[in-house]
Length: 208
Ligand code: SF4
Ligand code: SF4
Image (spheres, helix red, strand yellow):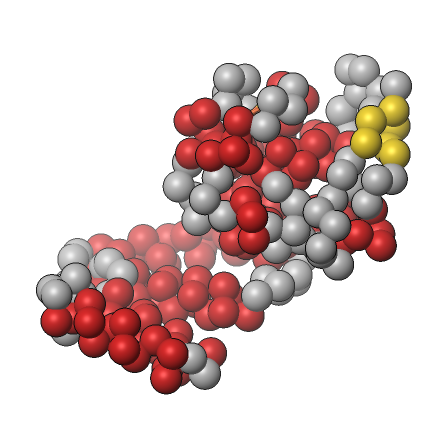
C-alpha cells in the first residue's frame, strides 16, 4: 500500500519530499526504524497517525516536519530527510507528545535517538543557536552542577549577536527575581565525576 508523507509547504523540504508517495509494506520495519528500536527500544510502527502528539507539541509550528510526520518518515526509513530537519533539534523534551500518545510510542525517545545519531554522524544542528545552547548548558551542568540561567542567556545572546534584543528582557526578569545574578553550586564535584564516567563509557562504546 502507498502512503503520502506531506511536508509543510513553506520549508526547504518542499522540493525534496512534498506530496511524494512512499511505499509502506505492512509488517515491514525499515532499517532506520529498526536501528532506533534496538538502540532506544522505541517501536515507531506502533504509531497510527492520530496526530495527538503534534496537536500538543508547543514547537510544532516551527518544525520542518511535525512530530507525526517525523515518526512516519522514520517508519518509512527516510533517514536522510529526517536527519536534515530541524524537528528533533527544536524539541525541548517537554514530553507532551509522549503523554498524549494513545499508542505509547515514546516519541520523545525518538527525538533523543535522532539527535544522538546526528551528533555521531557529524550533522550539526540547523539552527546554530541550538548547538550553542546545548554546549553552554552542558558546560554549566558540568561546572556548577546545574544550569545557571542568567549566565546561559547572557553568553548565548553574546554568541548569537542578540544581546541588544535580549538585554531588556533579561533586566526585567532580574528585577522581578525570575533570574539569579550568581550561580548556585549543586554537587558540582559529583557532576564532574559523572561527566568523566560518561566520556569513558562513550570511548569504550566507540571502540567496541
Ligand atoms: S500521538 Fe502517538 S499514535 Fe498518534 S500520531 Fe503521535 S506518535 Fe502516532
Ligand atoms: S517532547 Fe519535543 S516533540 Fe514532544 S511535544 Fe515536547 S517539544 Fe514537541
